[in-house]
Image (cartoon, rainbow, N blue to C red):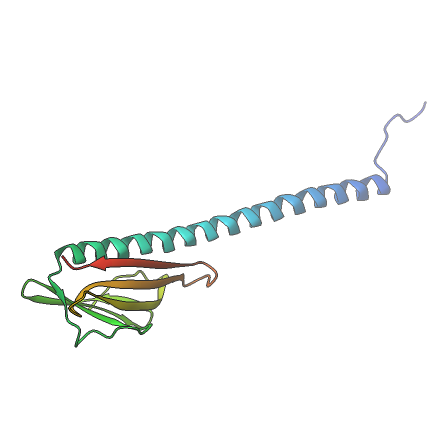
Length: 157
């Protein structure tokens, strides 16, 4: 009587292991690249939302502003200071340790860096400051390639 049971040979086993290893390598590689892309997208979203929050805050403050204190403000510097008058109160923006500060309160989250707060005064014909051009450079703490530069012009009403 013949033995009909047939086993796999060593060559077949090695071939199966090689194919399985290749498939697993492709799956792991795809998973890692997808997770890296997701993290990069999340970092871009954080930078974008931080820029939106800061510009909306500046819009709100300038909509209520009655003037700019030129003597206290430091214009045309990447680490500028901006003093804004709202009625009888004076409020300020400054850049300290890559954090944008408004009246002593940090405005950005811990995973966002503000690399530049550059304010340029806009004068009218009487040499009075009637607006400020603000440039912000916002960067992700975890990925320096993820950054956004925001240029806006705010006017005093």
